[in-house]
Image (cartoon, rainbow, N blue to C red; front, top):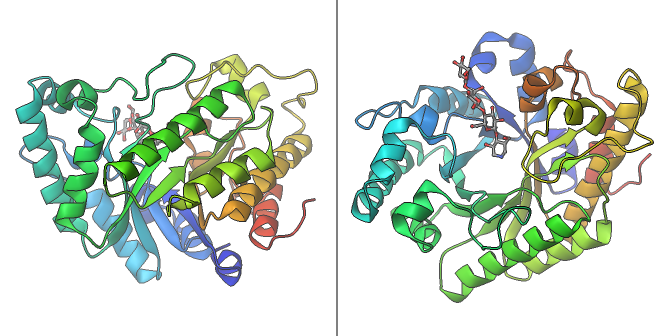
Length: 349
Ligand code: G3I
């Protein structure tokens, strides 16, 4: 897929984990073959990087950047400021108040950015900071960072990263902007408002990441997504799909929703969970529609949130899930071919 995407001026990437990258030759081969760009699924989150306050653990990200260097791949970082994936010591420190939180963030950025400077050129500086319309009327989601530093914490984070390395691409990453629902429409409005506000305040922001966790049967409008991407591009922002996968209601709804948001019950025409061909065909069509709309709007890169089905967060929640372009044998599924068609600007099916 890396060659197909590049041939049409785009980049394709994969979220990876260091353990299978080192220990599973088929996983490593698929990663080398398919991706021009890697993002650590967990290795650059606070949980992994900061086991204790006086220790950075770079083993995971070093293994990933070393692999990328061997295979001519770029690496993007995920994520410097998020409300999740922080250990108890971090949460306790943030609860001590603004001075402690400010210092904690500066020490983290000094350590992480200096260590990864040569290898990671694009960071999700902040992830999922905009409040979910289904449970909040505010612009910003409640977060230990918001409570510690107030609503200017995002501006501070982006400014501190820019001060430390003016050559980095600074990205804001979020979910819930993909579907033609009232919730996603409001989320898109809020993300645009955030980006415009940062622009107006002179806060450095270079790109917006649309995660792309696609709920397969939710309403979808290509025009809506295309217009949203164009509106972000009009702010001189790059747009990329950062965490592409497909959530199947007949597989996940019975087990409880995967991502926050309206409960996605299977529709009357949802395929039988045993009908793999029907499920794969529907997932492929949704991926083609979404990716085509983002690329037509001016998006320039797509990353899938895992190398193959059995390495997805979605299959950890529901083993029968088929969320990614490669199956458990690392072979292309219809979704892979649909993605290739989207990069080539071809119709599907
Ligand atoms: O590595 C430990 C393992 O040693 C331990 O036995 C196991 C049982 O607790 O946990 C393992 O760590 C898990 C880690 O994933 C690695 O698999 C954590 O518990 C688990 O919380 C963590 O979940 C990740 C989650 O973010 C939280 O960081 C998912 O893999 C990852 O797919 C998910 O990714 C997020 C993006 O960062 C942001 N967008 C949404 C997306 C899906 O939630």
